[in-house]
Amino acid sequence: MGQKIARGDALVLAHYYAPDAVQAAADFVGDSFALAQMAVASDKPVIVFCGVTFMGESAKILCPEKTVYLPAPDAHCPMADMASEEEILHMRRTVPDLAVVVYVNSSARLKAHADVVVTSANAVRVVSRLKEKNIYFIPDRNLGAFVAAQLPEKKFYFGHGCCPIHDATTVSEVEAAFSAHPEALLLAHAECPEAVRSRAAFVGSTAGMIAFAEHSDAREFLVATEAGTLYELGRRCPGKRFFPTRADFLCADMKKITPAALENVFAGGGTPVEVDEEIARRARRALMRMLGLAK
Ligand code: 13P
Ligand code: SF4
Image (cartoon, rainbow, N blue to C red; front, top):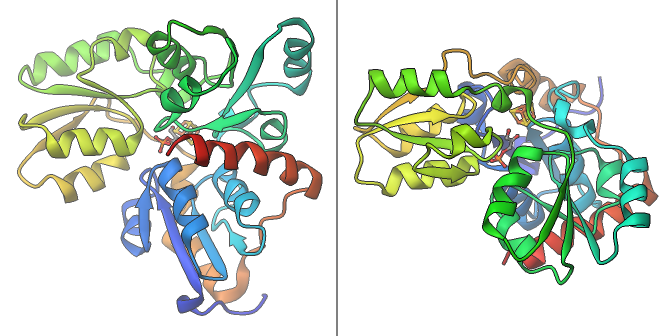
């Protein structure tokens, strides 16, 4: 066991997909973009990041002076490795006037090759501000297509990655949910397939979905994203009703972040997140550029 961490020295960040009890214990709950911004803005020396590995890595890259812990260091987003450095180098060699845009759900090694990083909350805005005509968007082909549809002036090349959990959303399950709740509006995460996104009243990040529900006059919503989001939806929208588009819309990796794992970090059982210095230096440039362009 290492040294105990004083609660007052740490900022506890949790993603909306973390278990409810973990969200309840956090200082701040948000989407990937808001959590990265909170990490940067914090004056605490320690960040305990209740999220998957790419989130802890990004916090460490953005805040090298802080000690960052992941309560579940084995909680890994499978999409983070769904692109290759070789493919990026090949695209750079063969396509002129190209910007390599890397979704934040990616390893630090991939971010090191990025011209800019994006999250689902800011991808359209950030890409619209790039001067390059050609955009190589990796790893998420669904989010890439969502962004491309809004920026017809750009030419997009897509990776082949996706979130296995969101990509599994089908039109038939959405149609069944509409049949059960005909008055409901569909909220879909941008990682869902196009056939699902096209039926939605709102498509975007988790925070965007929550904000839409909060400000909408509708009373019922179908929710096509990870079930943890229902906790914040319920908190922020009392009296409104939310129905997941499928019963098991769960990210097994996010669910590894248990209250016991969080306690273990404070008891001194965590290992600080480390990122190779040269990779971190290059990835930081792309992450900082995102923070600048997203304003
Ligand atoms: P958000 O940035 O919308 O929170 O999404 C993160 C994520 O992992 C979605 O699957
Ligand atoms: Fe990754 Fe999908 Fe889990 Fe998000 S929901 S962390 S994209 S596996």
